[in-house]
Length: 229
Image 1 (cartoon, helix red, strand yellow):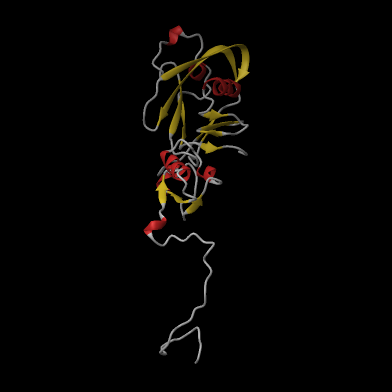
Image 2 (cartoon, rainbow, N blue to C red):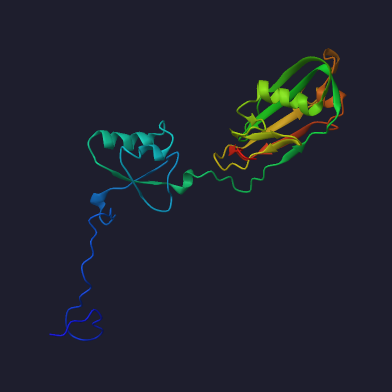
């Protein structure tokens, strides 16, 4: 008897050897099961085999998809095949973040900074931030004070972190949305554009000091991890 691994057109049985697949987790039949959902983290190109030991790889525990996998494991299932849907990846079509340069000029306190945050197409309320410090400070320090006391979480300082904006030496930079696609626009307004009576305010940071020459805006495409920026 002639044995060959390449039978070609000859009559016979082609032998391809024995493949040990005992250590693999094939997805061949519906009985294997595959959970596809909105997970905080995870692969989108192929399934992941999730057990209690590596459940944390799925990220946000509050997501319903995470709870589904957790319930399966609690019920005694040794492991679950999981894949994150590509639709959950942060993508904002045609979104371009912008940067706002802040001139290095001196301003005299006390004064008011008027701002508005528009989130994902929804117009926010105008907010007055009162800068009570007396004496001269730089315009950049004034905005840094606004960031630390009012906008922490929306804007991060130069130490880094996850935020919509980053406050850097030259001004404010918008996030690219690489962590979460939640577009936000920060508007710094003159007292007139804010809709208030100028005579009721001693100094208007944007209008009276000529920091930008008028109301300005900076746009973020969403959350970005600024660590190492």
